[in-house]
Image (cartoon, rainbow, N blue to C red; front, side, top):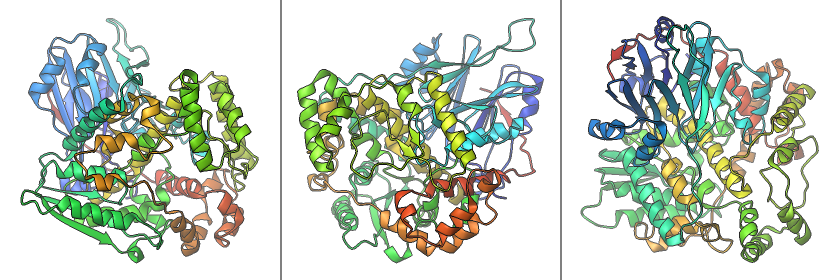
Length: 640
């Protein structure tokens, strides 16, 4: 059955109708991780004995504790000891107090709590763990980390406006929160969801409300202090995922991010550590050379070093992008993701990692968004330190070829976030000349194969969000863009998690830990990013853990040639995809135009416009339309 669900949970009201909903939850067939872990269903009960939290944790652990009427549930990568849970819950009377205590833990958990007669739920500030809610006709408000589960339980139809938005390469805040099913709503990252109970003598509870639980820290730390905090946060996140496991694996691309995690994983002391590198077809690529150096340094000849094996996957065995498109039906992602055309490549690497006997796989996803620094940040620096900002920006401008006067104009631009959002998509092609990137985000062109109906839906979504006076994530442009980029990357990484679930191998990206995000944002901007240093904060954080010779790398490889070549190698698969296109059935794409492009893989149109998001939308839609098994699960009640 297509559409294997990864682990999920649902939060239910204390009612007969809520109990009935628990028996309607979808039960995927026992394949991949479900077979290997048993796919057990755990239910944490209300004091009445009815289901409160129903969870199917294929990989993540559910930790729960009740003290009188108060209760706490944490769903994350590791089991939290009961003594720690008691220390978090004991004597706490409000959300703020509990949040202060939760800051002691790695920021990787969904949190579900019942305090002072109110249930509240939140995910992570990084956006890796999110919360959605919907109104059930009989049970009222129900919440879950999986919008597809809520759509199944409420019978929600697909939303063409949200689907059309997903054909863009970048979906900025707040439009990224638009769920693919009508009536299902996503709570913003950094916000929680409060579910009040019904007042005595009343039949229905008030509706849910959002509250803000997370604020970005002020950028006050020096590079040295920030590096210490970041190093501690990375180490704690890695331990939370793989600490105590005997056999683990890491993707070692050769880049700085994966190298840092390799040495952090080595420090946890597994009996066996497998490192996997996919060789590049480009003869000018440097990644394999650096990966070999890192593997040699990690082995080190120390008798206490874990047994270490470096597996290099030959370039000719690595699929091009757009290979095996039909296999994307193996996972039902929360939404179409632009990384979907690279699924076959990711599946190969994770399958090889699984074959080593690895019990957990680490990746360096998130490192670029966190540590490279985007040019938009110089808008922030310009307000408080214009000379330093211009000095840094001048260095960047010469590297990127930005013209002087357009750069000055962009730097002095003071457009509000709603005004930028209203014009963030256009039917006109983007300028060919290099354009300074100093605004609230990236302006995008609508694709030539989009229909007028799709263009109208997309532009109306942007205008409606702007007219609703959309608030930025942060009042400073650079911080807004930095955080939005991290959250966008976290969404994309969930596709990797879902592939791992299908194979039976947990996959983690420790850089998406909230504590890592906070440590990064807390560093003074002029020290955190620099046009003359490559990822200076990460370099200093890993000094003493990663050998200095490996921290000296300042280059980064790209795989754009594999994507373009994939259009040619898999032209017939793409043509098959557009024959009977579901997106065309929804009136969103011109299938004949896409068929012509499949026959012309090196068309200038495909050089100017990426097709990956459209492919992702088409494959996702085919899976979503036929996602639900007929069997239902019967949860086993467990007292909190």
